[in-house]
Image (cartoon, rainbow, N blue to C red; front, side, top):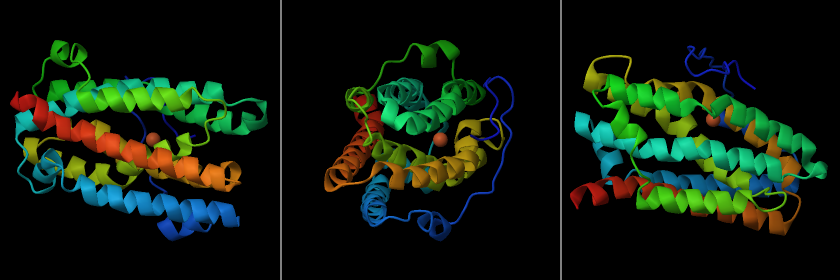
Length: 252
Ligand SMILES: [Fe+2]
């Protein structure tokens, strides 16, 4: 758990005592856990490479994002963020009594983040968007597929593979959000349009630490390794699709 308040209306308190990647790797002790970690790291590197080829991410990272691009980005991300509360709480409730400790971790994580969409909506409004536009927007094709897959996997008994899903989603917050927030702050020349990204940049290091702790706990076999890796790969592909669809659907 971090120092986040229960209400997104209150300011979330930034903390940054994140461990380095090497320190995190040292937390994984079993040979099965280490194999799982190596596999997840490979999935992450492929995802990071593909992410840098998504048009709206290229514009963001090269300082060519327009203000209307950013509004579209938030509007489309909001669907995944607000639905994220559902798949993570569904995952928690799918862990049976032998996984009660894992369930507790997942509940803590869900509690931390279940109202983050409110921060994102406020960024949208501060960036010049209308509240009705973001609250009434529909999921794009990629968000629809991502949400469907997440809810399907989260509904299985003891869905240990959701660790792979969290690996991708938390990885984005941990590795990308701070630099993306900086680009947005430069674009708007103000601090109050990128609070969602900067909050995740600050806090997802701790969430990654929780995930590293869970790897030994949930990966005990070849089957676990396969399902955790597969879910990480599917989530990575569908996350990319969600971002690609921002430009595809806006062109129609
Ligand atoms: Fe997180």
